[in-house]
Length: 237
Image (tube, rainbow, N blue to C red; front, side):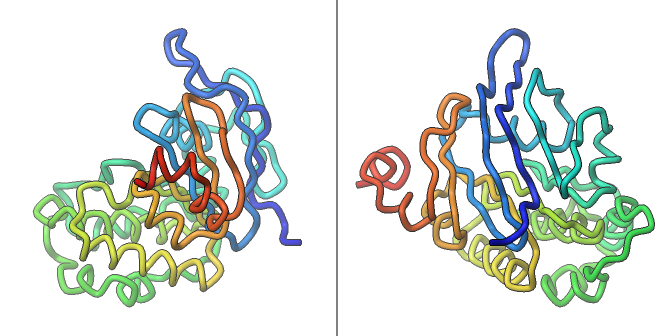
């Protein structure tokens, strides 16, 4: 059995009195790519933000690489190797592609990483072609590739991805998901939040379904994809 890279136990998070996460528990093992699917408002982004300590938990445990992350600021969490590609990408739009990638290295904090600039360019050739272009002028798909590339430059041991296919064409979605499969095959551990449940379940090994702040289903991605209630709610009949 692989080592647990991430363990979440009984996690509760509230926003202004609203319980966004209610007792969530899940694990991600080293080398896995795990999907977290659910409808809008289910709490998926809140979960990733809690893992990054961007939002504070009310209670519960988050253990990454065997150590609790409570009390760390988001930069310290990133420097431990837990890197987050947020929904909406949040690239630095007035800086070049190359400069955005260089900024990603801040999260290294002296750690070594296999994800060099050449590696990122090999994964996303368009970023090398447009390395001097202002990032805000890239297409949505290219910005998503840049956001992933910037996170890779920070040396992730666990990559959190929030809706990477949002707003992308099917062709660009294919390119992004192919890159994720390649990264996972190289050994990168990934927790993927994705509304496109079909695609998420195709490329992951295990999956969790989050409904109204609670994990309603968990299992292998194949089991989740064949569950009648999941098909009805998220995959279409």
